[in-house]
Length: 141
Image (cartoon, rainbow, N blue to C red; front, top):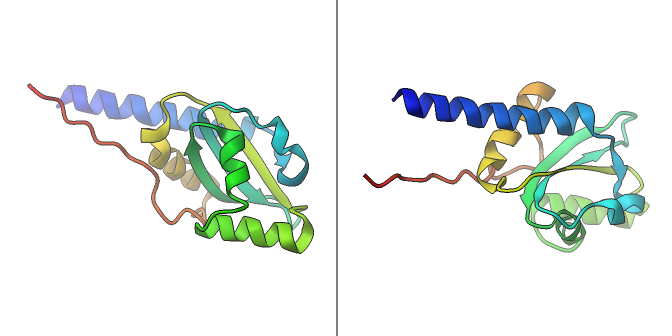
């Protein structure tokens, strides 16, 4: 039991470090102009909208290739994809912003990153319908 609590504490510390980096230590990039700056690496990314004067965080996700996934959001059918597509049609994506953190083996922690960001921001990320990937491993004894 103690081992499980220690493991969960470590996971939450890692999630906190990533969400702190996304919120406080990384500058927003323009979705329209800076997409090619996004790395082709695995990591966590967030999408925001700056139309109200300050950037509102909308979505956080995990991917094996950040640049490719951000490009895919323009053409797929998730709620966030439709929003991104509409914004590019409406104003060439002028108000959309992106941030990312390169992080290997982050898929199973996506839900923790989302929860951490929502807690620190004080609001739910409107376009995260699924509560993130949370892999559950069972140890065989």
